[in-house]
Length: 342
Image (cartoon, rainbow, N blue to C red):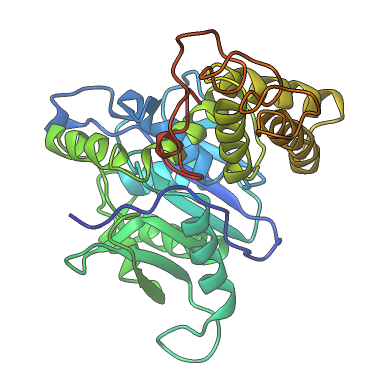
């Protein structure tokens, strides 16, 4: 199994606007007709995970029957319903206006903003394989080298041109396979075995769920899921918060870790929110935790009994109740998945 890279900072792709079309209306026959876009991986519906990856789109159109989603979208439906991927793509494209469009399926559990950025960067900055000039599209290929045309960025004009030609030649787009479209386009490929992973079967779903819980990645996945669930669109340095939780747990008491990080978030919100406000509140609380712990150092307090530091009962650590056990330093190294109660 390919190592999974957790969600990270979005790639610095061009700030030019783009739109997104997400196809979410398939029959899911290999899932026994289950509602595939609604299947949860890492606590979130597959559709919401894909919508998070294209959150920077000016307009996102989902081609399917409307449902509740974590992010606002526009809805479209191919005519007739179930008319196939080209008919669905045409229906979604009609509701977009940007020059570039990202086209995605709704079953990509590991797609993220960074991958979307790479697709757009390549579309806007490389020459097409058929000669000088930009390609018509850039798509991912899977580990076997197969094209994934529903994990791609395209020039909207090229899509409209070829869709119109196919409709004219075949009396419509109903039932036509995607390869009829991609064969007519000048395409560049990017290999990405993780982001191109899609969920067609229950075995695929099980593999995705297992991969998300791999050691070293579950915390990033959890933070992404919580932010999505709470509607928080904020990138902060989680390492700073983990360090704060460690210092509060070790220097004060274990329950201080979650309570302190909660108070830091509350203070940051009162200060206007944003990564800078979080960092400043974390800095102040972290400094306080270190000062608190320093008072427990023997000899720092004039007049205190030797070995008692700030006067707490010997052997109780940093002010914990007698008989409690102070956490060991190995309980939560900075940046680890085992942050104390965080």
